[in-house]
Length: 326
Picture 1 (spheres, rainbow, N blue to C red):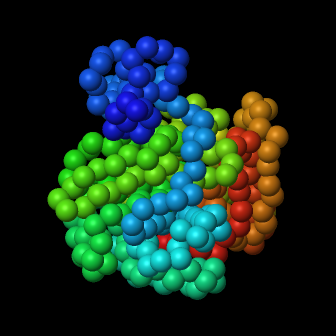
Picture 2: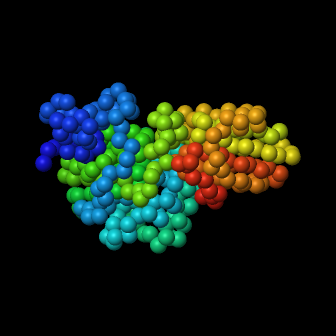
């Protein structure tokens, strides 16, 4: 079997440009797709389909990488057989929250775990920008007295970023797109063997059907900076042409967006809805918190406020009590 690509994990092959794992250069360490994204941010060859492989058997101790923003999805979809032994839960992307809210968010996640009867050996918040969180994970790994660790988690949970941070390199290719890791990738580091598995997700990921330039803007990768709109009359707030928030009100209200710093949002007149092609919508009334999965949250304040939220068909909406709106 040919050597696997260090980016996506597919066996490298040098004959068919239309098949996965192709590289024009024999002896390469990355396939053409991963090489072009890693060095040139070229998204034209990025794979947007889920791999056929599903990790039903894993080695060693599980490091379960959970997106700290959307925890409940991971708790619902994890294969319980993977958690039969002691495991380490790493809460990735924790730096989207201000450090003043870390304790409150940890309490929320602990209660969620109890609700789903999930009991990690260690639960560690992680930020690739904060070295102390990396050290806490290494201490937890040492405490298990094991040398083989399998990093599992949902698509886009930050598994490859976590391993890169632990080993202090950028060997594994990371991107804001789903399914970047297509097959298991093994990294030998000190006395450890770290295995990066493809993300588990039984359905189509919301990013699969969005343009690459939109994904790069809505993908959250850093501290969220809230944007508040004071609403004095009915209007529409447009977010990157994938979310249209139709606001109707009888008295002053407000709407705060908690999304990527790269997101572009604008307040527009209601006539802009003439150009909205999305029929997928949901109505919310009064003050509430709304999650747009894989995009962020909205915090609405106003007793007379009615919002009709139109979204791209691949995005999902729900009211939530787990968002931290500050």
